[in-house]
Image (cartoon, rainbow, N blue to C red; front, side, top):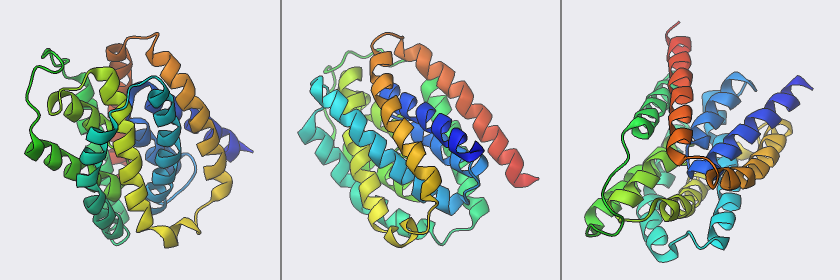
Length: 249
């Protein structure tokens, strides 16, 4: 019963974050699966991809209904990351657990720093789209998704704003398309590991994450995005510090 309650609560938090910010929820999903539900880092990254895929699809639908998804640009951005995501997903199953944990903690720190940085003051649409940078950013995002089981929305949103000059609302919606594509590519290389997961815990986790994504979309319309990002960044720094301390002790 305790495991079920923890899975429901953690899933709701992940969904709220993903729906409100267009990313970041998956950075909480993996630590929650490890420290609250007892998953190994390898199993947690695979389960995290399942959670990310399911929740991102739901949030993507909500943003698409609001006209906040650029399908062609998002598909091109995602295409650059599909092969890296698949390759990294296959490599992740052979890495030591401690390496995955440290790499994940480092990613959480980078995510937090990105969210705490001052917002870009450049006007949307004022810059030229740079295909080379867009492809590079897409490839890096795919690698991160495949290796650590995170969607990488905390990197996708800033990239879409600065490289493709999207408005923030459109960047959030389009990032969900990129996240979904990369997550599916990485999951395709981990199909053998999926059947061995604890679905009694993952099922409720996904259920509340999906519901939370809808609420997160509504929350984003009422609460300042910068305020949400700052709060989430502080939480991420605390999670990263705990993971690093647990690994070295």
